[in-house]
Length: 115
Length: 111
Image (tube, rainbow over all chains, first blue to last red; front, side):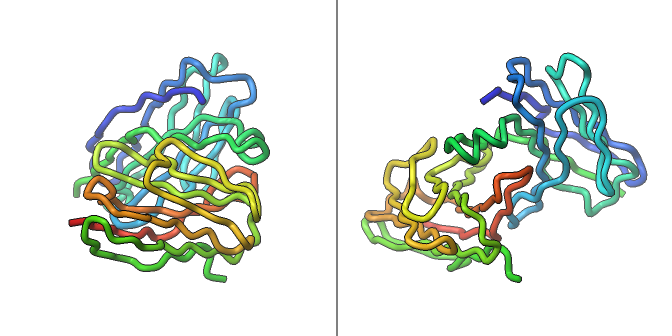
């Protein structure tokens, strides 16, 4: 699986837009990019997944450039409740499921939202 | 629909004791996995299963055993607990599509 690199921590204020960038220089052709959110004392929760260009859902947007060697998770107008650790994962969902591949979580980015 | 449930929520063991962490899912997913989470280490895969009767090792399998006799249950066994196994353990399941669903976790302290 492609190794990912994210900032260890980020600070923001309520109402701001937060962009967290993840580097994955060795991403493979069949790999998707997935972001998870984890609150203290809870399991990770799926946020968004994409393959290329831009994906948007009710929670976030995911921007992926043409070379796919990085991706940016964008959280619009964060609130205090968005304080969490955000994980970027890269992998082939089909391989993970059918061939017993692994979802590898890196250290994640600890986002702290202040009033 | 409970999703993924884990028991117990918290456990204290003495070195050398054995115990089983329970994981159950009601989503009829074939794929289940166990992770441990330690400060500064992110989540690391211990064991996984792609269906009933099929299990395999992840990144850090030593000291842990698993079995998968039904689709719903995927217990994780510690045969002889060690302080290095103090961690938070998460069970997860997926239907093979885009997301994994995680349980609430079990906090284990080995003295």
